[in-house]
Image 1 (cartoon, rainbow, N blue to C red):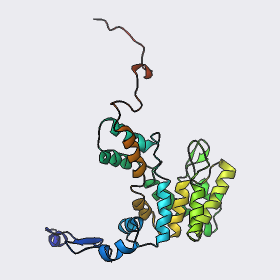
Image 2 (image 1 turned 180 degrees about the vertical axis):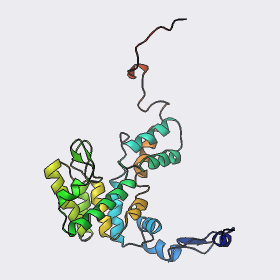
Image 3 (image 1 turned 90 degrees about the vertical axis):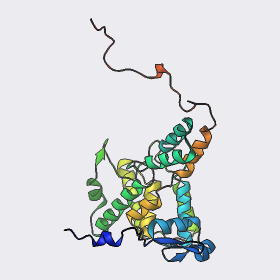
Image 4 (image 1 turned 30 degrees about the vertical axis):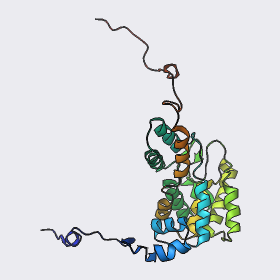
Length: 270
């Protein structure tokens, strides 16, 4: 028979190395007391990062990530995930259902903050290692997939306008918090300059944040976990905007709006 010792030991038991609730007494998160330590000294973002990664970071790092979260959660229903939240409101779904669907939609390779952060951090970590060992930027870029004559690199492109309005606040806040610009962010800026010169592509919010997280010692999976719900605030705003409106208020369509491109109308003989 197969050895079942591992499962036998866990029969009707829950094992956890991340934390536990001591009913009526305290909650322990990664060996930190929530009631007596974290509630007195930590911010919500610090506790979120602790839960997401197991790392208790300095307040300055958490404060910078709060700014990053603000930049990932615009209250604009044109944005993909917010469209889902607005449509959910249009069908009288709850705010929790709407925001949950919006968050799930952002688990995407193209946008959203979570999987894009994982992809960009992985790319930057690998590329920086190649760069410091002598590989040129052109060689690094040549190994990436290409679309419409431009390399596809998560964190270094943006639809509509290539200038990302979030970068200046990120830089100013990093300077204000006295957080040193580390090697990954310096490399990301060099890469951005190269891509701008040769392909008219520049670093965006995700590229900057990914390099920042690497400089603070986070792994790509840490970045994924931290950013898991980063779009929630904007999504709930878009739900609130629609929830009291009459049904079919969000982007209503007429039958004439649908353009049929199939086979022409024809008679079917009896």
